[in-house]
Length: 80
Image 1 (cartoon, one colour):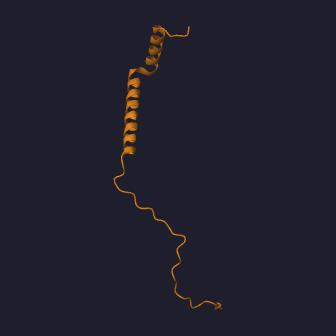
Image 2 (cartoon, helix red, strand yellow):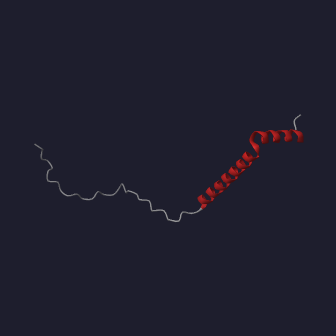
């Protein structure tokens, strides 16, 4: 008990082949291989530097003095 003999493995493989068939297992392994390839390609795409330089960050200076505005003519008058 504890370790599996060669006969156990043969029975397990036979059951898997009966349940899934040879075609489905080979299709499944092909799909796994394509997934690994696309994953590796995605990792390589992340490592590449962007071709366009990033635009400089625009900031607003909060301590700047406000620009002078035109004098208002209606200051102090009430609307009727």
